[in-house]
Image (cartoon, rainbow, N blue to C red; front, top):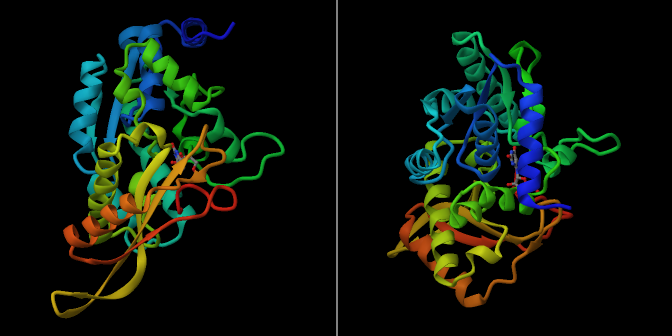
Length: 317
Ligand code: XMP
């Protein structure tokens, strides 16, 4: 029978039978529930032969780097911290295409993993928190069409020369959350909304710039705060802001101002494979909109995304 305890035992024993006694496993952790559970399963299976690394790609949400490091430490995972923000942001300069952005980010991650692996010859494996929907949507299942190349499935170049370990590959998100709680992750952390590996790069349409990053960070924080105030956070699959390059003429004070358009996306879903746009109250939408245009000077229009998946996807990119 399916129980989180049984699944933990099974996965731990599978990891032990795959990883040789003097071999180490590199595991990139983002603070997201998938990679956190992956790292905790590995620690249980192979102890300090787990080498965890937290790469700050400069595409995290506000305050997220510190929050993630603190939480992981509390869970007994002390990752190597690499601040590669400038490298990622420089590499993304001028890049507008979605799949191109995903490819660049995936390759930069792989380069960082390679450098770490070269510094310790016992590192033979790379562990990733791939879940079943990632596998399906990246077209890795026979007969499935590629929708987006999730960097943790599609972006691993041959030169990396590490064997891949994907301990939660056959699990859906609700199952991963159940495992997290079984492993001692605080409920609140286990119930955080999913956040994509390529981070805010997939919530910015067109080129990633400091200006657009700042807008998405502030606006997403407002969306999250307002949902929490309403006690809605846990009913929602994901809620965030998106910004592109289109502008809307505004009046702020008595001055004409050309400002950004921010789109709010709030969806409910079971597993991310399909999703419905959330029928938020008009009052909630109004509060979010007013706060965004008031608190973010460069925004002159807020829109609400009212398309479900399908035909849209959840993230714009
Ligand atoms: P889409 O936008 O394809 O997203 O409807 C489905 C779910 O997957 C998440 N997502 C990602 N997760 N790496 C990840 O770890 C990625 O590259 C990636 N792209 C999308 C998305 O947030 C949603 O929950």
